Image (cartoon, rainbow, N blue to C red; front, side, top):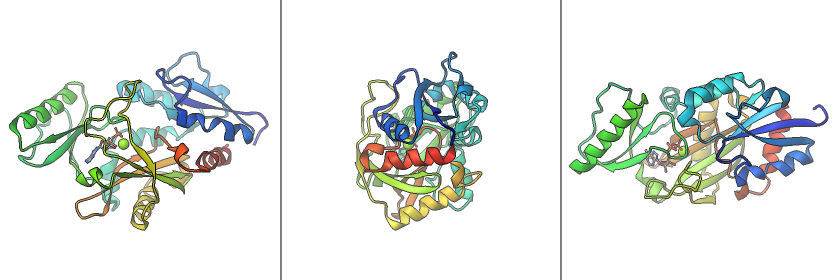
Length: 290
Ligand SMILES: Nc1ncnc2c1ncn2[C@@H]1O[C@H](COP(=O)(O)OP(=O)(O)O)[C@@H](O)[C@H]1O
Ligand SMILES: [Mg+2]
């Protein structure tokens, strides 16, 4: 590694100094000879060429600047995760590819603009956009109620008029009891996992307005969860090692099997504060990439 290595951690204008969890990376990186600058991804004054590496971290406003964000990722000379992965991963249609690769994923109906949604007449369902972060524009509806069905239809119509594709999924109700398990991998190696409480129960937005406030606790993943997560990683285009970080979010399905809700390769919260050594392992992974 060259002396005085300098990397950027990319963030958004709402959090220019980085999220508290990501600030935990600064010291372990410094201890490894890596200087960190927090840089706002769409700040035109930043010279991305000046950094040995740019790591995408808190760019949580990208869904409302999607094209610009993907174009930015392609322009940055040395980016983690690479632009090709970001492009693939920021649109949740990758879930269909992973299902084809044999991963148990949340059953999903997809409705592009112009397509009329066929909503069920009962049960609890989730409506959300294919491009989203922080649970933005994500709602649950009990479709047994005519008013809720109308609201769900209006939600899809709103996304369509903004040119967005809508996803409709059964609400995986085990999230209310078991929660969601997020497994973190750095360059393909498992680091740690956390439990995230259910989010669509009237949770409040964070002060930045970028994400719903989450209830996080450390968790040991089950053997079945680890196995599912490894299967997901194996299906990453370019291989698991090409991803500096990967987060696999699982909720038990109807049959209790770990079911993929989301694979996060773009700007996942890493939940470093919840496990000793997690920030150091991430710093090691960064150094190995440099
Ligand atoms: N099908 C579903 N069943 C249960 N909860 C869901 C479902 N889809 C989304 N959620 C809830 O909404 C949150 C955000 O949805 P997610 O698909 O992870 O999108 P993102 O995190 O990219 O905004 C999840 O963490 C989960 O709590
Ligand atoms: Mg999520």
